[in-house]
Length: 295
Ligand code: NAD
Image 1: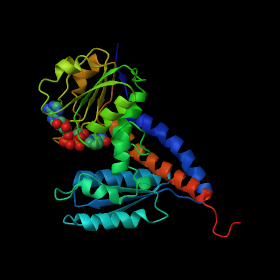
Image 2 (image 1 turned 90 degrees about the vertical axis):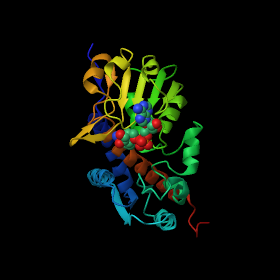
Image 3 (image 1 turned 90 degrees about the horizontal axis):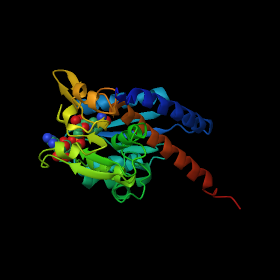
Image 4 (image 1 turned 45 degrees about the vertical axis):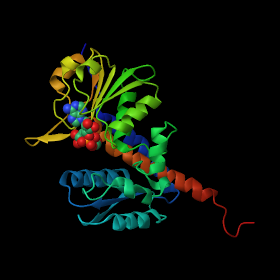
């Protein structure tokens, strides 16, 4: 049977429709959701991602501003910019764009973002909730996109499923593994030192790949009928490639994301959804705060 294509563009369109209604409701109360991005340095592909986010925000009615800092900006300067944006009542979400230049570490900086405005889930408090499965308010965008796509797969709900996560980065692999575990899947985390992947992948109902190695996973590595989510994005000879060899995998998998058109488009909307959620929370909090002169 042909594999189901988990179409990220169509999922992003559905999520956008839902978001537009929530944004319209906020606007009726005089609130425009606003995201402030702090961008350190010149990373071109990261800049392209941010420009795309600004455009998507404009289309939906979310204001996205970008504060650029010099490549050599230090942790202190970056923290103070994040704090300033975080204290602005009109700004609902604050994000420090990654990857950072080598001399900066997200761990030294992320707590400068107020936890309630940390829409990409990098603040230690939100990371802690994610790690312990206690429900962070803001799931980081790419892991959130993976979970939203899994919700559309034949293996949802994940309870009792065997899942393999290839890659263990703080940004993608580790949080996706935690989120799948929180859904009661049995999760194996694989990485550069794991050796042969196939013995693990062959047993897995779900395979999520975020390694940055084009073509790492092939059809013959998979269990027939598996759900395959390809997070990888590498430019090879001017073309965007995933970590999964799509042509061989689509013949074995039961459901699979394409690259491009899979995780990428959902990531943007997942982040903006967190901004809308932050704006809704701020609005509720403001309406519950007693007026200074109230009796
Ligand atoms: P990373 O380099 O920080 O981590 C890669 C991980 O893959 C590491 O844990 C490493 O041990 C593992 N790995 C590398 N080679 C491997 C191999 N041969 N076998 C098994 N494991 C191996 O990368 P990252 O930031 O997690 O990103 C991973 C990929 O996802 C990249 O292609 C990146 O561009 C892409 N990405 C896509 C999105 C999106 O929205 N679509 C967002 C973030 C990252």
